[in-house]
Length: 480
Image (cartoon, rainbow, N blue to C red; front, side, top):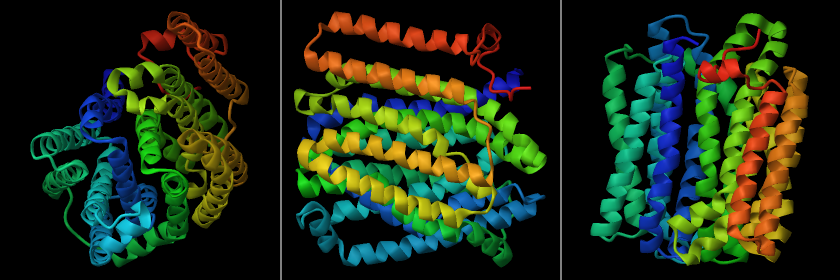
């Protein structure tokens, strides 16, 4: 592995590492300043913002990323980027105007109180500005500018943290301070990106490129609608059938478990451009090479999920007061769920231009999620929602995998992948059982270390990792 390749991998991993660590190190601050109920309202504001901004984006992130690789010169790249960004910005502000007019009603419908209207507006704009910024980051990623991608991503995370701490601790704005800090941070970094890329890309607009993007993205709009409901509906369901405190616990667990998803996304930033290139350049001959190429990132994605699932107890106890400790099992369960998302992140249907099928699959997934979650949330609250989300992710994942394989077949190394899945699930649920029985902490720590060691040794046994890879700093180079 060349030094440049090593640096690029490091730059892509660094933002996700920082994004994962910062929310965790700020937990001792915010969890002692905000009640579990306030944290629940904050979660609902972000969920609402994610849902509406997802609709405003109309799936254009996927359309832009795919169509970028079809443009052959800098002028077309500029026209594609600026056309998409201006359109998304306009739709985000149109949606924002409607939210402003009905903010009190929205607050009541979602949280059961009229007093959080401003919070829902801040939550929406914080998420919306962050999605607009994402197009500029996608350009940096697609051009291989890993260093700029990393530092702009990190700048936002650090700025959000500092502003939020100041507004919550010193101005005492509560959840509004948390949301306002995120909004200002995202806006500041977006403005910096605009000035940075203006020097690189000539400004231009193109109706034709927008039409081509819409051809890919518009069929994804229902998928965005259903997909965000699928990922955020559980919070609303808990508030509806349980309490705002239950939402707060679930959101805390989800935020920590999301470290796995961030980590997996960082790996995807490294390997996804190569997967796309294999698809475009090698056609059907690429399916076997892609399958071998993806085994290693999946192994490390699953390792991240296993480590977090096993040590969720220590993380929660160290970082939060006792009122938040019921989130321990939620972290473990959702960590496994995010590992399963690896297969759904592969661009088979997007490559095949079957994005309308993605929307249909998203509808099926959300129906499965709702049907499974309703009884489990009623019986077990936030923990029930976590189990329900895991079960529905497993069922939906199998359906999505089956359909995706029909349109672009990836020859997965199933023997190795099944080993990873069985291992992480078995060790995680045994750990939950040992804690519920009341085994001594020292004994459970020993068990966790042995579990991780067994997983790593299994990686050597199945030749997923080798001594050569270790000494070459874990190359993600495609298998020959």
